[in-house]
Each structure stands twice: as structure tokens, then as C-alpha cells.
Length: 374
Ligand SMILES: [Fe+2]
Ligand SMILES: [Fe+2]
Image (cartoon, rainbow, N blue to C red; front, side, top):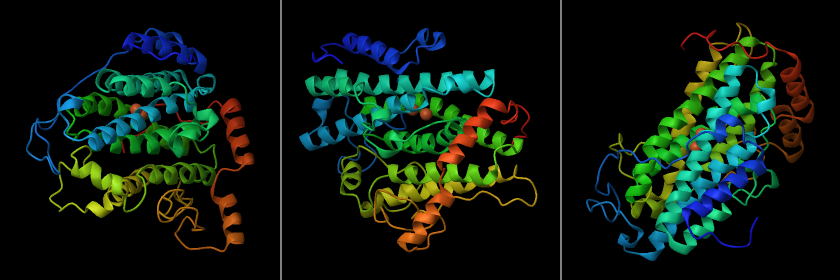
């Protein structure tokens, strides 16, 4: 892309159009969508926790009393925005393989809203963070998921088929819901106000994924052990998205009032600053357990039900990173672990099979509306 730097938000919008063409998602519904920044209500006008608790939320970056806090805030926005555009890049090739017109429309809505989320983060960067913010908003459209240039591991993985898509939207977008909720308590008012509209949109993505997985299980065309392999692919990368254990940045984000705990609004528990990421990751794990339980209601009697992979399995961030733990959390020898990975993660032949099913089996995903409400 151009070596010149953008000066205004309109300049960025021009780049955003170029990016959309470049990615190949300029379908008519997307092209005619009215992209805009949306701001909604927040729980409080005062900073809710940390060293500045009780003070009015910051309206402008210059209201923030310390450069380290301003830098930390800008980083949170960059990372969030990067995931939004990355997910569109990951999903860009699914349109031609939609199980139904209903699903094609859902996909269209999901990618459009992810673009709007990226737009929202760039809007904040450009309008509040001066020259540095403009540079970052531009870089956001220059990295590519399919060149492994996105900032977080999950967002450089391949989404090759609709089983990937549904598992991704159920579990990776769910990490998104956790991150947005934590940012909804932010002491920086424009960021906190951005979260309510994003969370509303996000809930559609989660529902699409969760419903889609149930429909695949119900259709009984894709073998269940392959569905499990996709669950094993996407849940551990989502564990990683919560960050390192005993994170000092998560500690400071809380002390500075920039990012709360996922259950900040409900919990009476004293904050444990040394284990912020572990706390949120654990809540995520519990939510995954409930989701898998719901999907299992559609598993035929006598079949092996789906499970949530252990928190130690296939991790690349944190204290269990790059160790040989099994899906049930046992430490295996390197040889056994190599075998185990083949049995538990999608292999080239599994990906090929799902691709073939997707293109030749019209009923491989149960029709929408054939589900009970569980
Ligand atoms: Fe999003
Ligand atoms: Fe999403």
C-alpha cells in the first residue's frame, strides 16, 4: 500500500475501500452498508476501579495523567482493531461455499459488522491519538491474516470451511465478547461507549456459530470426532487470547482503570491483580463447558459426546506454552504427544473430507429452524 501517511479520517476511509477490494469481499450487500462509528451508554461516568476510582471518566487522551497510561490505552485499541479486520480476512473465502442462502446472509452480516468494529477502533485512533494513531490505523489495513502478520495467533489461523467458521464464531468471537465486556468498563469514555453497540452485534456472531455447530451435529454427516478436532483447534487459541499468566500489563490495565474483569459488574470478589488473565480465562472456560453441553443435546444416543479441551492442551502462550499436555491435561512424552496431536487436531485428510462434504452434501448442515431452542 501507499508509503504516504493519511491526514484525515476520510483518507483512512479511502484506504478502507482499497483494503476491501484487495481482500475480495466487496459484495453488493457489503458495499451498500453504511459504515459508521456508534457510541452507546456506559455503566458509569466515573472510573470504576483502580488508582483513579471515582474520578470522571477521561473524555480526551490529554485528560489522562500519564504517558504510560495513554500508551497502554492506544495498544488496547490497536490489538482490538487488528482482530476485527483479521477475522474478515480469515472468512473471506467462505461466501462461495455457503450451506444455504440464510447462511450466506449471516456470513455477510458477520463480516460487515467485524469491519464496522475495525472502523470504530480506527475512528478512535485517528480522532484521539494524533499522528501516532493515524499511523496505527493505516497499519491496521496493511497487515494480513493470510500472511501471518496479524498481532495475535488465533487471527493468523486458516478458516478453510464452514465447520471452521461455526466453531470460530462460537469460540473465538466469544473471546471477543469477553474482551469487549472488559473494555466496556474502561476509564476512557469514548472506548467504553464504543462497546455497547459492538457487543450487541457480537452476540449475533456467537449465536450464528453456536447454532451452526448444533445444526452440523444434528445433521450427522460430518463425523463427530472431526467436529471435536475443530473444537480442539479453536478453543486453545482462544485460551491464548487471554494473554500470559501473572501478566503485569493486565495488572496495570486494571490499576489504571483501562480494562476491568469480565465479571466486574457482578463480582464482589476482591481483585487478584497477579492473576487477571487467569481469572477471565477461567470464566471463559466455564462458558465453553456450558456451550458444549448444549451442543451435546444433539449428539445421537450412544455416540461419544463432545468435550472442552483441557486448559493445558496445545497452548502457545502462558505457563503451559509449548508443552506436551493432552486434551485431558496429562503430560505425554514427545513421541506420544506427536501422535496425540494427529488424533486430536484436524489433519489434511480431515480438512479435505470437510471440504468435499461441504461441496457435495447439500444436507450436511441441518436447515435453520429445524432446531429446538436448547
Ligand atoms: Fe468484532
Ligand atoms: Fe464477531
